[in-house]
Length: 334
Image: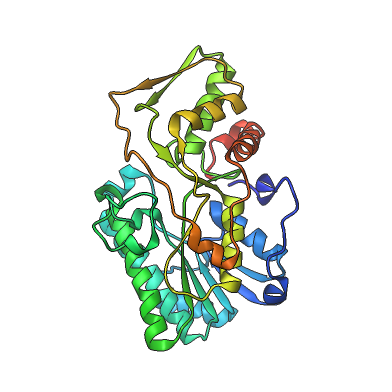
């Protein structure tokens, strides 16, 4: 596992609402994951007393463990990042597991947080919860307008259930909960294992290796025409800190840039940053996936969030981080 200093920000982290966070105990589940490490650093920089939880600390599907953790640490806020998830293959092979684990973890934490008089519960959700054929840009009020994409549907449905639970807990118990839905995340410290990596780290690894070999070309799947939206994990962590301190509306909120980029353009950005000067070709016999994926991000402006890190700058930073890994780290789980 990479140490925390491998995701050190280029600039100092801005303190978010230090008057609110200073001395407040904040429990973060999934704290040792990719986004979790950014969130913990952001919270600490803002003055919070951070309680980072990982798998070794307890089983979040077991109510006794969840109750014990809340009783032992007595947090004022809980940020729930932990998830049972994986790539498309894992979602297809283990839909029951992903549905059960994600729904149960969220419900256990929500209920025990309410019982423990936690001030605010922050749920981190997923764009997989959106309907497969939702219009673009994706707007938060369309979550229930149709079934999610089948391949990741079980994971998405579990998160949808938790969206509804956050609202119902406000209605019945006046319990403060919020739901945040980030775009595709990237940045230093991301998973680079080919079995687990997403599009940005997968392309970074491919183009860096091709550049090092002096390969004349790289062949990518599809046509390169589909568009996606990417949010740097440092921006996402800032958004989560802002929302936890300031936002008290239980309706879901998208976190993103609001800007979409074609996969072909993304590939060129990564190739240039990696120093690859060969040809980029596309295998149109392979699937493209959804033609567009971009979020409506207006609702997040209510609590003061706008993404700051331009994609090109974030890609250069992430490629530089990847270049700095030694051979052992390159095979490690981020």
